[in-house]
Image 1 (tube, helix red, strand yellow):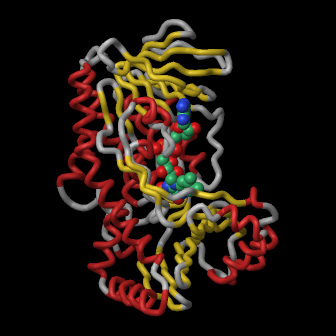
Image 2 (cartoon, protein in one colour):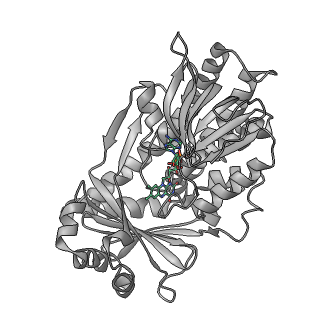
Image 3 (tube, helix red, strand yellow):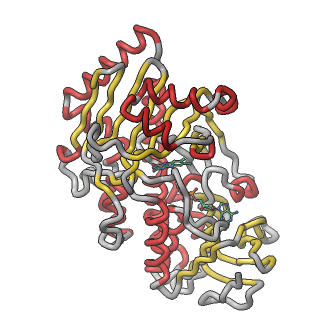
Length: 426
Ligand SMILES: Cc1cc2nc3c(=O)[nH]c(=O)nc-3n(C[C@H](O)[C@H](O)[C@H](O)COP(=O)(O)OP(=O)(O)OC[C@H]3O[C@@H](n4cnc5c(N)ncnc54)[C@H](O)[C@@H]3O)c2cc1C
């Protein structure tokens, strides 16, 4: 692949731009679109040559649906996503929690199921309409460039045609949960493994047994499964296994997997046997959260999963990736000023302000997820009874239901200052 020069750029071997984003996932592409709309030259490097990703980031929270709408993308995505209308938790065969999203009086009360490749392609298309936007696929950032003071000045990258350097006033690591840029930067972080991992698989949707607008959680003892309707005509299933337990499960063979699912969702017994023939029909997600005390340093900031990996509960990864991007873009625009170069000091202040603005919200979602994960792991008669009682109490109170779900779904759309701030930026 040959890299074309950007607006400010020079030769294929060396590109000069204002912002270099490493990673064309939801965080990196949303940020690039938001910067390009503001006439800030931006280059996105994406290691993969395509957007195809299975089992990833398809649940998009109501707050992000609201943001995607404000970015003018929702109409473009019409027909590619499904609105979810309710959530139902079943514990040991009893429905213990139900929430109707229509009961929440927000502009966008419904989460949606939207395939990540569709979202990324729409973002890339939107970006391509702006002359300041450049996406370079099939290109991997391999090293950070720094000046004599240690300020990050860009990255070195590997393309199919050889090496290139991208010099930028600000480099943004949007390279996901295993961020290499975070590693190279020396920014410290704490990885907190959860007690269990999750196996994902996709099955034909059991129409007749289930309606396709309901998120289902099924719990039996300390085992739980998430059942998420997915386009087209499928259900995405995620169920827990002990931490690092994949090898043991594989040794037991696929019947062990079938039986796990029989226990949680007998409606899918036939489908799992007909659809899952090898372990490569499944995908294992190592569940951990990452806490990064400082998201930025001179010339560099982290966003999305690179700054705060979350767990799959209530689909928060894409949500926070998009909110990060929308929050950061106006701060960077202001710090860069008219010339698009900015001073390192102003950029650092902007990226630090970005972290201050975002980290409480991320911490709130993380705390909700960890509380939920602890509930899932409760076992024994007493633990299970306590869990069922808790769900029933929350379910019987619209106020409590709203309060619990707000930590994941309605942080931006809640009335107050935060909405005004984000709106001012968009
Ligand atoms: C199995 C699974 C299911 C999930 N389901 C959901 C869900 O339903 N809802 C939800 O909200 N979240 C879900 N997530 C999490 C969600 O996918 C992430 O939180 C979200 O994609 C984070 O966005 P991001 O842009 O920060 O990072 P990513 O989406 O991980 O994007 C990072 C990008 O950087 C690229 N990259 C990495 N290194 C380099 C490099 N050196 N040079 C160039 N490019 C590089 C990668 O190719 C990738 O495209 C799921 C995750 C997994 C693994």
